Length: 390
Image (cartoon, rainbow, N blue to C red; front, top):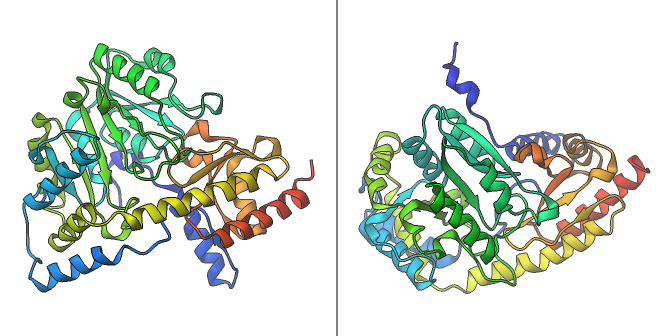
C-alpha cells in the first residue's frame, strides 16, 4: 500500500515506543518499573466518576454541539476567571477529545507552506510533528540547562523571521519540568507583540507546580488577542483515559476551529463533558493531594539521581518529570535508555525523543510510587556502577 507523502512528515511519541519494549519484556516474565509515560498514577476522583455515571443514566449519550456543551464552556470560563488565569467568554472555549486536537486544529487553521513555527526543544514531540505535517517549517528554540531549561528571549528574538507565524510555549514544561519566570513571559510577550506573532500557550501542567507562582504570556496586556490557551483534564484530575481537553481562542478563530472539529471528531462525548464540569466545579482536595505527593516524589528522585556517579539533575519546578544530565556516562541518550531497560528493568525516555537538544539527557517520570522510584534509583545506580565504571 502506498501512503500519501505527507505521512513521512508525521512523527510519533517515543515514550510509547519505550512502553511497547517494556511490555514485551514483561510478557517474557521480566519485572519492569515504568518511569517512561507521563500519566498520573492516581485514580480519577470519585465525584467525577459519579458525575459521568449520573450523566449516562440520564441519557447523555447522543451528539452534542461541536465546540462543547454550553454548561461546560461556561464552567471552563468560570474556572479560568476564578483562578485569575484569563478573563474569557464561554463562546471562546472549544472542548475536544484530549488536548492534542487543540494543537492540531490551531496549526492546521493558521499555518501553511512557507510559514515557520517556533517550538521548544527539548519539547513535546507533537509540536514539530504537526507543524511539519501541515506543511510549515518547525524551528527549534533551544532549551539549555545553563538557562534553567527555559527560553532565552534574546535567542528567541534572533530566530524570528518574516515567515514566523506561530510561537509555541509550554510551562510548566515537558520534559524538563521547568517554568517561565515573570520577566521571561514579559520579554516573550514583547517579542510577540513587536513581531506580530500568534502564540499557542500549552498549560496542561498548570496545576502541577511547586513552590512558586505560575506565569503565562496571558498575564501581559494585549496577549489574549493573539494567544490560544491549551489545557485539559488529563494531568490535573488524573483523567488521561477520558480524553478531554480544551482551548480558549481569540474570537476570530473559534469558527474555523469548530469547523475542523466537525470535520474530524464531530464532538466530544456527551457524558464525559458532565464529568468535566464536576472536575472544574467540585472539591480541589484530591488535586492538592496529588500535587503534594508529586512534590515529595520530586525530592526523592532528584536527590537520588544526583547521588549516582555521572548523573546530575536540576530540581524541576513543575509537572512530574526529572530531566537528568547523563553526558558523563559516555553513551547516547538512546543507548543509555535501552541499557537501563535491559539491565536495570527501568523504563525511561531518552532526551532525544523530545528533540535534538535533548541529547545527553534522560527523562524520568515520577508519576509512580515512592517505592518504585526508590527501587528504580537503586537499579540504575547498580547498572551505572557495573556497566559504566568510567
